[in-house]
Length: 46
Figure 1 (cartoon, one colour):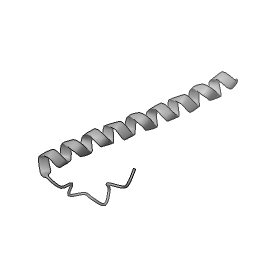
Figure 2: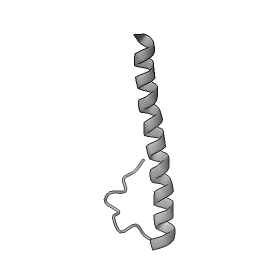
Figure 3: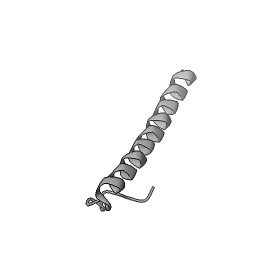
């Protein structure tokens, strides 16, 4: 059962990393297209 717990933990960490990467790429694209992100309150410090 330790491997199951480890798999869940790794999956959670991987999902978090992927999500942060995608948000960084999206943020960069938004800044390129619109200059400043209009929804700056949703943009929190990472």
